[in-house]
Image (cartoon, rainbow, N blue to C red; front, side):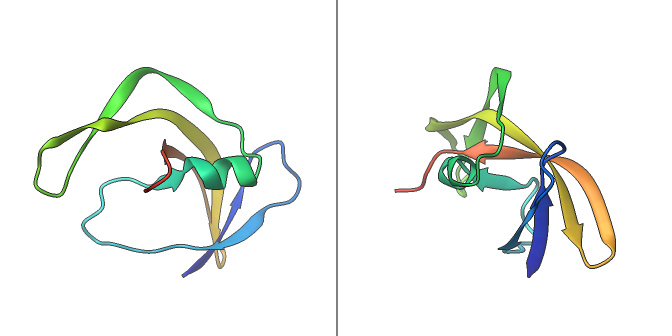
Length: 89
């Protein structure tokens, strides 16, 4: 599914392909994508720990930053915060 992403002070947004998964609880975006598109990150006061699919905490991969964006799909627009995850190996 194609959506638009734009940060508040940025005049030009980008169009990206987004994967949908009905089991997912939150939106995430990779650190590499954030850097490549020059999105501004916000450092969290406390880390967010991630659980693996087997429900065990993943102590190596914590969420340290978020990105505030406007998300566009057709005529819908929503301001939201997306968690930034480290690059996948």
